Image (cartoon, rainbow, N blue to C red):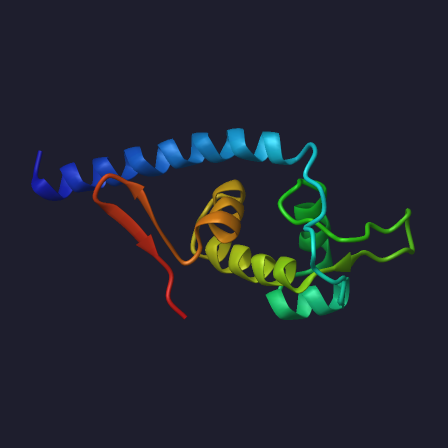
Length: 130
């Protein structure tokens, strides 16, 4: 094996580990996350989709999956959700990471808890700029 192949295998192993860990995190997160505290519900879903450059369908899926937390959930069809500004920003980050190839659970975890940089494995730091 060449040094390049060793590096590719190491990165692949790290990413595989992240994917497994993020699937576990997503499974736990989808259950019982309370709305964020202390944030005003100042945005409607249309504002969030515009900010994050995502579709309403993506926003709905991410919310139902537990990746995003509205302050006020709509009571059935025709009733919109209200969102704090931080959730709109997390949606924007997730969209960027997903577009770069991150699995959705990994994108959500990084966007919420690790942004803008984190050591994802010994000696490997992931850093997002502008």
